[in-house]
Image (cartoon, rainbow, N blue to C red):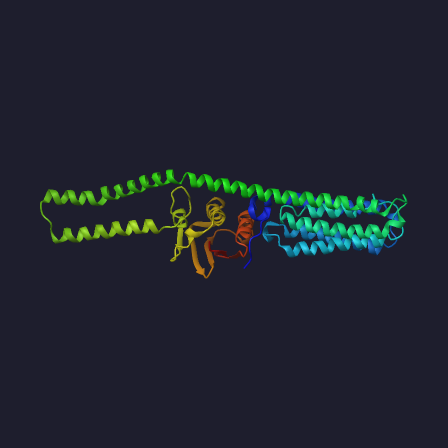
Length: 380
């Protein structure tokens, strides 16, 4: 069971989806920059196999960043950051080894900027503290490599100056990414806190409105069933055995209606609301749907509503099963398909991406004639 992390991707899944093109751009830019500078300063290279290995390690880190940040693989896990850090450190060491004793200028080294750009690319997906730690660790590696190359630099300045020049891009870009991540999460948390406060302040007004609505519903039921029954009794002037049976039937119907309305969860209301073109059943004997957190409700509701909008599934026959297992709730959603596996995954990809972030164990199974989703969440 995983604990949700405080990352931009976790607190704002839709916002993280829009970062995909920038992530790709950062990875491509880092790779192209490294190749161009290696070509320009090719006279400094003493071992081309090692230089190629350095470029390969950098590009492998970029590929990991792009692939793991894809919506279909969300959320971005820490283990991939560790792999990227090892690859980037390896690229720095290999780059230094490929020019050992022949590196005349520190300013034409691609390592500091390329590594910094890739670490910056982690900003939408990982916590700010973690990004800062990665940046500092890689700056130490880069600084160590530059210190070892110090005697070969043509300017003849103190080695410490070369180290400062080399580590500055790594630290600047890494800390920029860390600042973005931390600030973004803090702003979202502040917005959520204000929204919750406003919702609480409006509760009294909503209660009065709901009470009036419920009262109107009851009046409607009375006018439809009870009033005609009593009117007929008054007009007939007598009560028969059939009238007694009819009275019991009306009472049971009213009681059943009231109990059913009181027990209906937000999911059941969603699947019967006239304003939404979706229909289905909810198997939730323990009434645990009402305990879902706001982000869980929002993500699931968005997907269900999307079923009607996309047209790739039969939105009139949605089945949801909720079961509580200790502190965890298991959910299974099944709906009939109207399109191929590829079409369904393509049209619903943004919704699946958000679900993967909110419910981190989502399993999507498209086996015609049904689409089945399985996921779980912690009870609150």
